[in-house]
Structure formats: C-alpha cells, structure tokens
Image (cartoon, one colour):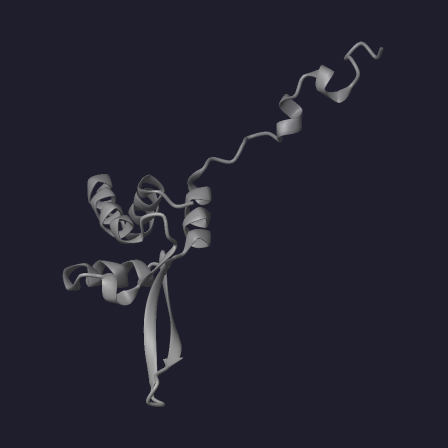
Length: 119
C-alpha cells in the first residue's frame, strides 16, 4: 500500500527536489486517492493536473480509460489515474542497502540444528 511517506520518498528519488517539496506533492496526490489505487480524471483540479502528468512521466502514476456506450448509441470515454505501486516499490527497494554478507552467515549455530562443537 502506498502512503504519503512512501510516495514522497519515491517522488524525491525520481524527480529530485527537496524532501519538503516531495512531501507536499505526495500529500496533494494522496488527497485525491485516499485509500483507493485509482481515481477518475474528472476529480483532479486543473492546477494539480501538471503534477499528475509529471508523476506519470516519472512512472509513478498510470493512466487508462474505458469506453462506455450511451443510450443514444454514442460512446463515452472515461479516463482514470492509478498509482503505480509496483514502480514505487521498485524505486524504494533500490534505496535499501544490500547486506554485505548473506543472512545465513550471520545466523548462530543453534539456527542450523547443530552446534559448532560437532555435537
């Protein structure tokens, strides 16, 4: 699940800027999404649209649409925005330091079911 904090870290990594700018942008975006992962395009205020497009270009948001038939036979296209959770997770995983040695090297002998004395 993407939170304001995780999105802010991803924005800061992907777009640069200060952490306070990234946090403000993340708050703006998440105020639209709340606990949802996708929203309808019509909900976005015009002054926030530029932010959404820049996050889309950075791979943090995705867009998609569906076509709905109207009663008079015409089609209506509805546009949506979605949080790109997989990309946000990938960006944040890249910032975590990799261990210098494999985890199993740091386990005590008791974890292996035998002791170091061979008994």
